[in-house]
Image 1 (cartoon, rainbow, N blue to C red):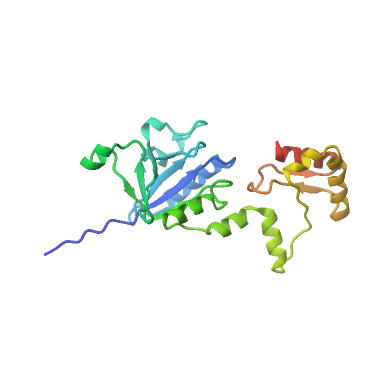
Image 2: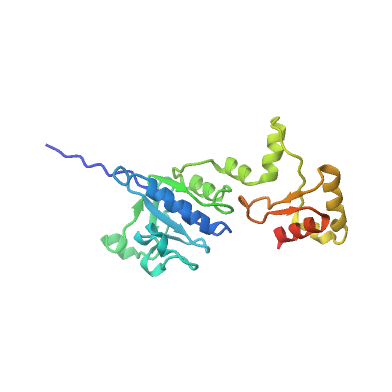
Length: 231
């Protein structure tokens, strides 16, 4: 008789990242980790720090291990995505050729599917999705185009309007508007007054929820809100 042992699927949950929403992503990532059924799969936590280095280890399961500087790196293994299309494996960064040859050291971790729970830029804007596409890795969520489009509020509004979806009146400006001082200090408030009036909400184009938001009830507050976005 032969016995066939099948390993449970290994999903990797990625959280953290270098955006301003790093801490929120950590909370979300831990919620996803603990929501997965450990009896039917083997979840692998992957913490991406604010220098975009990838780490894995048992400490990442516990919220109390995270502080202002993140978890203790000495208790974790730094990993990277393996080279080669479709290999979909987390490889220890500091594993030597001798370790790989002899099977010693920290092992490589094959991943069946990646669950990116990164909030904000460099995570849900198509960057991470592009990496997975390049490596031939399975992942959940929108693809590169959908992620990049959904993250950019201006592009989203343009495409929604083009498709006939009602969109509230809006204006946008680039950072280079600051080079036109002092003209823009009066021009932008005048445009707001003509288009939709006050109060107006100022929001970064590529940040989530309440990050960088200002509710401006006057031209002065509008200018202050724009400067806050571009600081």
